[in-house]
Length: 421
Image 1 (cartoon, rainbow, N blue to C red):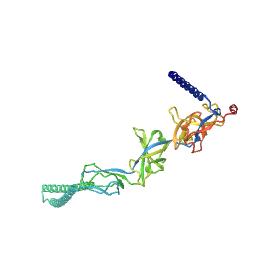
Image 2: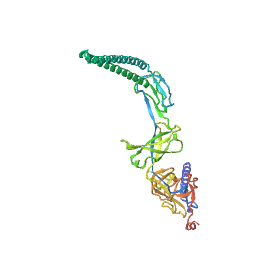
Image 3: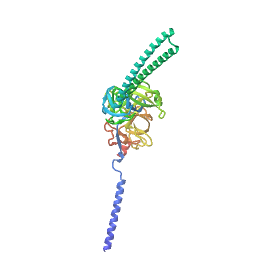
Image 4: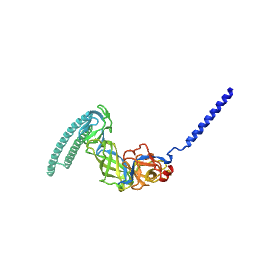
């Protein structure tokens, strides 16, 4: 009896499971009421018309700030630093003393040379006195010779003594000039140990100290000239060289120049190209009265090249980039090839269109080919579309900005309505 009851329970359970399965399958196969009316999701996007815009190709280059005058001061002579009269990042005037090296040895040499000049000048005076004496003796000898009172040998001796005295005087004069030249040389050595600013400039970092020994040619400090203008140099590829000339205006942009781009003028073009890069150096001038630009700074430079054209442009948000090709979605009426058979008139569909892109113009991108002026395309929210997708226009700058897609009811044709009834 127990076994029969258990078998009955199992049979009832199996029948219940089977009945439930049949009911579930029938439910899945049952078409919901109103399905014949048909609903298809529509994506809400913002649309724009392809338009033309004036465009000139621009070469984006890198510029380097170069001072009108800049030097790195170095010592001409060796010596020990005695006094320093400048500090780091200081504006110095032309002729201002920057550093003095110890010149005590040279000053002692100068005193000795000055004393030797006095000795040499005394020798000159003595030699000149001797010359005058021998000239007088020779004159008397000549008078006596006319009276035949002296021998010819004595006359020759007098002439020889006079020539020797004149040579001695010349030697003494040469020694004076030599001593004076030596004094000038020592003075120059002393002057070279006092280093002055060659022009009004801003000093770099000071890395020397009093008491430090500086060898000949040792670096003291770098100087950047303080001027109202400063050079901005950039290298332009050789293929664009014919597009620029002296007097042209280019655009410079950098955080140190402020938020707005600055218009600068080309003042010179180098006469040769770089052998490695084949680029030509171009020089411009930038207003630097505020002292914002310093040597070696980097600045972006935009150089217009080529003729002005009017290509088709679209917002960058309208372009979809993919491995299989860049494309946009053209929005137009009528059923697309992927639309459902129940689609009605008046609806908007997205059509994928492959395009060839050019450079950017602000927030727009140039379309080289694949699109005509005036064609309506999806902009904001285009990432939600596919070829043949149903589209609903959003408010400009509003719902089309990537919001969730809406649900649009597709109205059936008259025959479909009759059949549904």
